[in-house]
Length: 304
Image (cartoon, rainbow, N blue to C red):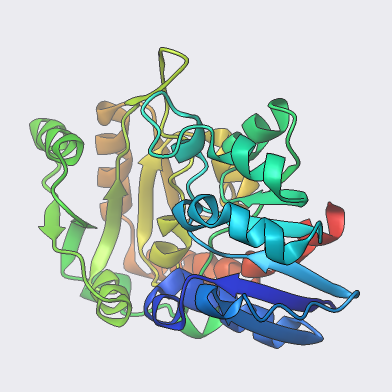
């Protein structure tokens, strides 16, 4: 157990962002003591010698306020939780060189990165980093509706980005029609997942690193949410991220390397006997419940 001093953007942001809210709650429940300060309050910095300073600020916030944080911390070690590592390193990164700048001005004990591939990449650049999971809290997990009562065979929720439209059209050409729903607040989103038999999350390679196209190999944050509602999760084959997240043996995870393979696996899943599907759903949801999940943040801090 640890004494955690957490720095956040604002209380409004934390309490209205589903993932940040779950991180906060985990820290409150798992640390010996937990102090949370928003950016405006950090000027009243009163860190104790035995406290662990953890930033869950957005990357842009850390970068914008790095000099101010350096003045306040005065060399105190800090761990930085970060969900968008690629925005510092990709060819068209939103904040190029951010990690290097931050590490040069703060005593960064480690970047806690929510992608195994990108965490390894950060380490390859000479910076300390550990992989941590994006997860779903136990209280949100449910087997939901029985398989045969789910009315949406294949669904997706999210914005209509060009690559998603192209992907949807490709699936349609292979006989898989996706019921595309708009983005919803967390509770409504989770409830809608309980109406789906499977959820397609196709992220075709489109990122550029050093002039080369690479897989979008870090976008597994949705997986625990979707599986937690008893919904099959259909995703591009990425063994590193899948295994790192402990999802490689989850019966609700379906990976594919081509649209033909995805079609065949989805059709096989839709033909499942309902009792067999319900058994797989229970096992899959239980695996999400029993995983270390958000506590991987504390585990990573211990290891750095």
